[in-house]
Amino acid sequence: MCLRTQGLSFPSINRVIGLNIFSYGLVGSLSPHIRNLTFLSTVVLQNNSFHGKVPFEIGRLFRLRVLYLSNNSFQGMVPTNLTYCSELRELNLIDNKLDGQIPKELGSLLKLRALGFTRNNLTGKILASLGNLSSLTLLSATYNHLEGSLPEELGRTSLDIIHLMFNKLTGVIPSSLYNLSNMHAIELGENQLEGSLSQDISVAFPHLRHLVLANNRFTWPVTISLSNASMLEAINMALNQLGQLEEMI
View 1 (cartoon, one colour):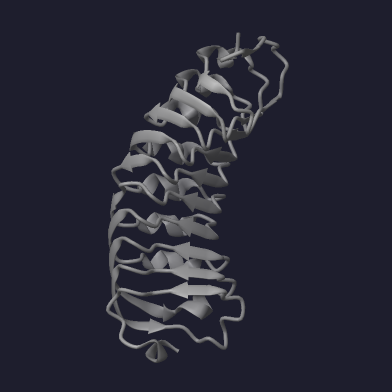
View 2: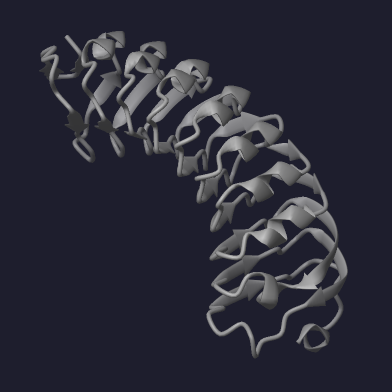
């Protein structure tokens, strides 16, 4: 068997290329025999009630491009051997009970475009190895216990959405992030970030729609030329040390 849940199982059919079973009310663990489906390129099991560890054997799916395990109750650590899935484009582990650190080995998944860890129990730092992911456009890890500073190496990615709210991040926003001119959303609120934002945000990020930096320790100067921020829909800088709003405009 590849997958066994309460009342439902799937035979090992070697040439299955997609496993799309989301919002199906499935309960149980994901069997290590998933490794037998070596032609799988897409695994979408989100919004079920899977529990237990993410099987280490997923790393044997060398053709895998999309892995969505969000909205389940998976526990344990993120398998480090996912790095053997060299074709992986999207990794979504949002809303589980995963712990441990973000594996540095993920930095070898050079085709990865989206990485989601929001609402887990991850600890440790956002590692510099993620800077190797030149195709990465989305990094989402809100509601974890991540700490340390944002690595300068993130500026080597193609990020246009960065969601890292409700962590324990410290330090300043790396100057390299200002090179990411396609940025649409920067959500770094509810951390312990500090320093000033020395560049005009609206010039550095002309496509920016959401800017959330609330409840940090940012200070002046902060410059946002609203005349240039034609796409900006929401901005929240409350509970910093920025003075009056009109001084920012």
